[in-house]
Image (tube, rainbow over all chains, first blue to last red; front, side, top):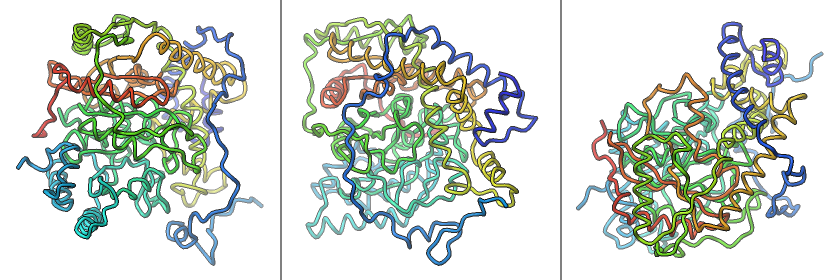
Length: 94
Length: 488
């Protein structure tokens, strides 16, 4: 793990790392990666890909509509609300 | 009459139902206790006295008019700050959700309301439930009531400390890698992580969805059993809840140790403190003298549990926490330029250091080029751990381990070293990876007067057996401890 790689990961995670933080974060992160690297010593060849997703009790709910959140209640907690809509900042760049 | 705040959960339930205690008197006594004591413990992020007293009054009125909701009507319960309650702030002890007021109730809250519990939001925690000491809260560090220079454990430290400091009889926490059992152990109380799928996670702000479970803390075992009966069950709002037989509190009864096969670990394999090691050995000797057979189990896979846990939990957290982007949820950094900057600025300012560290690790292990070596490998290792537990339960009735390798450490002692901090959960994480249930039982004090916890684990959906063994442990003289009356 080097500075460039750390910054790339941070960019994917939408987190900024300022230059003052880089060295301590790099140190922590390298140690953590080194620590989790221990699992490379474990032989997992006997485990099939299908076994990872084994869950026997999942049950899908029926597809029906029900009243959940009320619009008025949402309006109370939304930072900006106009004419029945939650207003968000502009997300399309022109 | 015994001071109200020192009543056990069972005594409270009895007195409320025989009419010798009013909920409002009890709740007022707890509020007084919190006002005097919480400046030292710092378990509460908020205390809405007016609303709490109103709930207690309503309960007393129901009792007076013979319209009780249940035998639990009027019992106070604390709520961890990551469980949504309508109209209340649910911040996950994070600046990013500092002002978030939930527009809905979590399923567990709805269930408590239906029974008439008096809800006490909101208890401090490690930010987004990430931590082993409650030092990662964005707002305050909770202290251990047995010694306020020490941590209460984490991440549900506020929930555990509030019960241990006699500020409440019961509370709710959440457990992803040990976050109920470890603070229960370090605070000398009972704490249960139910089987994955037993309790709905709807309304629990997610950290790692395949590991998180809500569970109870209590100052006696009956509180754990009653809350399990109330909280568990299929919920169509949470697809991962299981359709299994419900748990019934009256199925819990003491067991006869004779002939029971108890799975144990070789303590020299792990770095237990001498006091924890001695107590564990002494308890096992006591059980042998009562006729139990000790069966040493091969826990060598356990050394992989923490790396596997951190890879899986952080991968899920990087995904779950991506919704906090300043647009959909959470703090919005006004004045940012481009959309990408708004995301990054909001997240960078809203999340604390440990949360960022875990998001980065999760993003790393899921990223192209590393996925197979880390996340994929960890998922396969998780299958091996799950299979190993299934194998264990072919040869033993139950597994006994210490909950934590040490008793409570000092505030600040491990904050600079994330790896050392992660290792505090070495005995609890594999239980979450396997999805089995486990409880931490009080097991006496160490030479510094700090609580030791005993972790008991059983197979999936066998909470009845788990709590029956726990009940018999509660009757062992060697496990008795008293909660501190004075907090210093």
